[in-house]
Image (cartoon, rainbow, N blue to C red; front, side, top):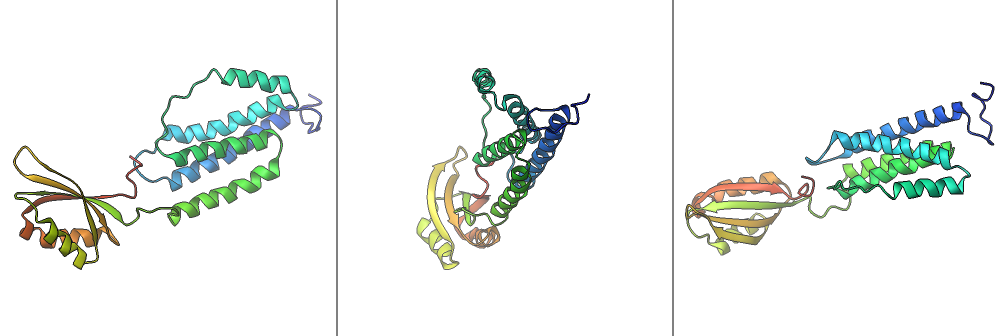
Length: 223
């Protein structure tokens, strides 16, 4: 018990192990909550939240074990090489949060406390800013419009009516349904969805449109 509360740099005491695990848990929770706050779409999973937390803590423990021990590091690397991850991550951004938690866990495990404590809020803030302002998005104003008509659509007239309202329109697909109605799929570019909906409602009678669906392209990869 004499060395339990010893923070000597030459050995890992019980107090250091407990402190590192608690700090890694707290930092990993902050990362997981940031991911939850900035996640969009329908593919969010509570198990991923737990994964982010556990990855940080486990990484911390691994780095505590292999400190200054090359043979121990090689042994653990060989053991982990047997593990194969088969879970498909639908959003590439989720991978960044896994590595974020892993990096912070490694920092705590190696006793780089200032690095972990300073970098965590800064990276979380960056993630929130990227989410809030939707940096890098090219599809914020793009939509997919699906319409059903009773008779063949006059595409030239249909496209001209959208053009008058400064809405970009491009035909993606058209097909005949079993009930002899026709279905058209368009790529639409406009400032917001309400403008497109209003336009469709106004021109539906003149083009025999029986049904229409408008899908936002912004979150199309998140389902």
